[in-house]
Length: 562
Image 1: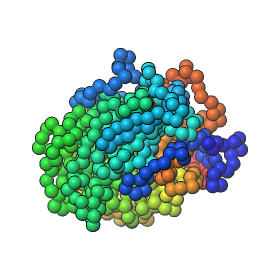
Image 2 (image 1 turned 90 degrees about the vertical axis):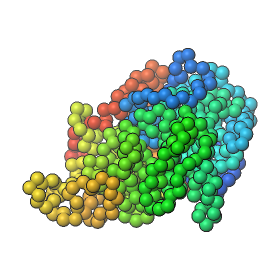
Image 3 (image 1 turned 45 degrees about the vertical axis):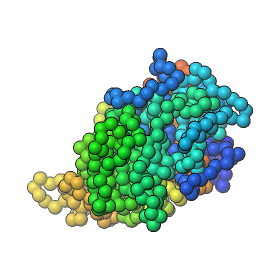
Image 4 (image 1 turned 120 degrees about the vertical axis):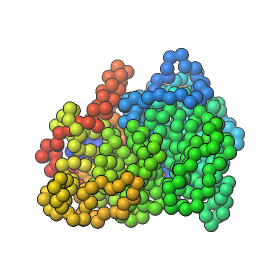
C-alpha cells in the first residue's frame, strides 16, 4: 500500500504521491488491486480493466436475504441518485467505513455451471450481513473483483470468475427495486444481471438468482475476416435513469440493445438485417414477452461508450467512426451529433445538471459540448496520447459561489494512455460564445472579434456536424497535469471524499481530497450520518450553484500544479 507522508514524496516508479490544486493537496491515500497470487486466464486476449463505484444502501426492514424475483415495476429515482449516476449508474457517494468484516473472501464461477469457494483462510459468509457501504467493482482478465472503498486493505473482498468469456464492462443501479442491481457485459456479447448484496452476503455459496441475457447475434457472424465473436463483444452497459429495470448494452458491431430485466432473457431474436451499416436503424422486437425489446443500429464500427443524461432523457454515444451522437431516448430520435478532430472517440460523460457533455478520444483532446447550442463550445489540449475516460466532478463548487444562482463554473477530469490525470476548470464567462443578433448581423465572439466560421444558429435536429476549425473554438488549458500511474489509464471516478483512478492492468489509486487528506481519519457512526446528509445536499445544490470565482482563483487556475 502506497501512502503519502506529510511532505509528499515519490512512490513506485518515481511517481509523486500527491498533487496540488487551488483547494489544497490531494494525497494518495491507498491502493486497490487483485492479489498477485491469483492466476487469471484471458479467454479472448488481453482485456482493459474498468471501474464502477457502487453505493449499496441499507437493506430495507423486513427484506429477506434473497433478492426478489425481477418484476416490471416502475418508480422514480431520487434526485441525488440521478446526479450520482451521470448516465451510467456508476457514480456513487462515499460515506465512510462500510463496517464489514475483512475476513470475507470468495470466488464464484459463471458460465455453464456456477461454483463457489471460500478463501484460503476458510472464512465464511456473515449470516445477517446486509452489505451496506461503498464498493469498487473492477475487472481483470477473466475475473470481476469487488473491493471495499473505505477499507485500506489492498486486496478485494470478493472475486467472480467467468469460465467462458471475459467480463469487459459493468454498471450498478443504486435505486434497483429488487436484488438485481449489477450488470456485467462480457466478451461474447452476453450480459448478466445479479445482486451485489447477495455476492457480499454469502460469498461461500453460488450467486443467487443471476439472470443470463444471451446475445444471439453473436452466432450469426462467425467470419473471422469480419471480426467473428469480437464484433459482437460488449463495450458498455448502462441502466436507464427513471426507467426501473430497463438497461442498454452497446457492442463492437455498432448495435445497441435495450433490455427489460423483468422479461425472459432467452427468446428468439427477430430483428431485420442491417443493410447499410452507416445508417441509423431502430427496430423493435415482435414479441412483447422477451429480450431484447429493441435494437438500435447506430454506426459502422464499434460503439465505444454510452452515457445517459442524469434525468434519463438523453442518451449519448461515441464510436469508432469519430462521432458523438445525442438521442432523445424515449422518442428514439437523433438530436445532434459532431465529429472528433481525428480518429475515434473513446469516452463521454454528462455534467450533473445535464447541460454539458464531455468526450475524448484518439485526437488526444477533450471536447466540451453544449446541449443548448448543440455543438462543441470548447476543447482542451494537455494529453500526450489517447484520452480514455472523462468525468465532471459533481462535488466541487467554485469559491464565493451563491447557491441560489445558476452554475457558471465546472470542474472536470480526464485520464489517458499517457498515464496522466488532468483536471480542468470550465468557466462559462471565459468561453467565447457567439452573440446572437436579432437584427441578423454577422455573429461575433463575446470579446468583439469577428467569427464568420462559427454557425450562429443551433444545428437542425438529426444532423451530424463536421468538426469546426480549431481556431474558431475556445481552447482550455488544464488546471492540473499529474502522472498518477506507470501503466496507461482506463478509468476515472469522483466521490465526495476522493478521486479514483484505474490503469489498464487493474491497479486503483484513491486520492484523498484536501479536506479529507488533512485529517485522514474515519468519522464515527454519528459523524457518518451527518456526513451523508451534507454530501447529498451539497450535490443537489452544487449543480445549480453560481457566482464567478475570485480573481485570485482565476489567476491560479491558469497554471499547472504538480
